[in-house]
Image (cartoon, rainbow, N blue to C red; front, side):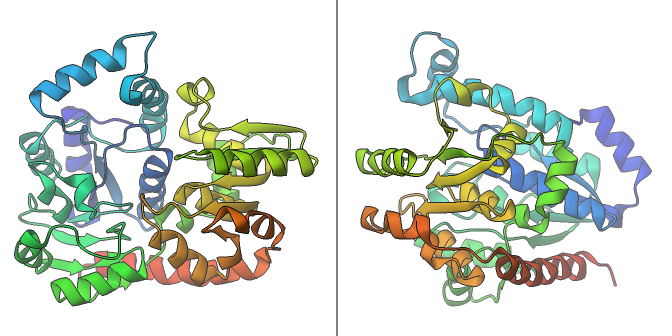
Length: 375
């Protein structure tokens, strides 16, 4: 579904401007959660009668780092700084992006982005979701892409944008961001802390909406991805930042829990060819999911799986706490390895969880509908 220039021209000519929505998000590289949230947002936009196109930006590297990354990612027999394995995982994701996400061809810089924007002529541009407003993640010459600085004649809005932390990391840019946000028709963030940042740091009110992946229910994922049922007695782990204490907890619950097998979605060999679809399928087939990934937790909830989530402070803790507070799942979070057994055994009333989730989903879709609508 990757659109080259001719494909964008066809879309531009065949759809009225007010129904076209361009999506600005993090690079669609090797991050399962980041790719899936983009897919889900496009699915919802299409269900509302819009024609979405995602700006498929490449990861930005300086000239010399680009050369180094190129060789390290393609040189077999090594995995320095994980560039090689990330490259192999990214190759598996490109097929998913091609098949499931309406994206432009890869764009290298600001000029490419501006050209794609002018070619498509969208009525609206939405930025989100994931940590698109975490400065340490977007710290590059074109950081203001994530505040839609390239948009000059379209409605602007954010959907479930995340700062990742409970504060804005770059005080020197506050006035610039205030100026960018002044032209937004709607500001939506993913965490309560993001709403506080918008109000107290930038002076704007922001709605709190759920991550796009949660706008779609588990049955729709199963149908759309044609997921195959697996061994539901398996222990599935997806741990981004492993350490001996986490490994000890996983091994203990595996030995005591009567599981048929243990599967690590971060296994260096398995993860190389693990597409976003297969990643979801693995979680959907688990008896228990142990993760420190936000989207690992999210898909456990979507698929009604027992799970425990190590709160990943370095990658952003508030997104775990904020969501679980909404859904009544605080007992499933692990702030210390001492909490592990209690968290595993804490029961989940998924009827109640999904009743709460349904209300959040309804409010989030209403935000999209009302903000995108033309009067």
